[in-house]
Image (cartoon, rainbow, N blue to C red; front, side, top):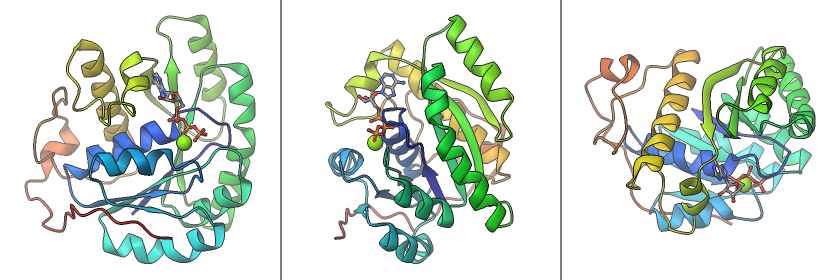
Length: 245
Ligand SMILES: Nc1ncnc2c1ncn2[C@@H]1O[C@H](COP(=O)(O)OP(=O)(O)OP(=O)(O)O)[C@@H](O)[C@H]1O
Ligand SMILES: [Mg+2]
């Protein structure tokens, strides 16, 4: 399965979310990160976390290589770039699930329109694939902006996940500390970890995919129905890191 974070608007949280999803999935099976952004921010972070990754930022290479990589791992997580249309189109022609982080601001939501258009075009060509979900990241609790953004997103034909990832300093600090919120201590990190856990559980539940339970409990993960069902773990998990040209 290939899950991609896409939004041509920069800085909405694609890389942060992709790394957190990789960490969350690593506890449940084998996962490979594809860093499709020439800035390489997620691959540097993945390397320090000893997660397997490839850097592939050429659209043709993405199109050609994603299917075979998806056969080698339980899940391939693609961190899409800001700005570059061809790469986003390639990713959307291959991924099973597209996740679109949006910042709760009118300007940011408008800038995400092009990405939504690409998603609809891919869905038209691929009989409904990728399944796509929007979600709000970097939100501030209780603000009018958050409420208004939720109303705007609710009117779109692409569904919005109910989990919101709030703006927290621990998430801004995480890449510099080579860590994820799942590994950090403190109440704020526990809240961020719990939000990511809820977000990813929601994604798999909406996509109709039953997830294996976590091999080890993260500091703040809550048990959920979908994760509690399965009892066996994959033996395919790979710990070696890898890098491709
Ligand atoms: N929920 C959050 N709370 C606090 N800071 C956040 C949050 N999400 C992301 N950030 C910070 O915002 C910045 C942009 O996040 P990130 O790099 O994940 O976005 P991106 O969509 O991958 O950006 P780009 O399009 O440039 O690749 C980073 O400095 C990151 O640490
Ligand atoms: Mg990024």
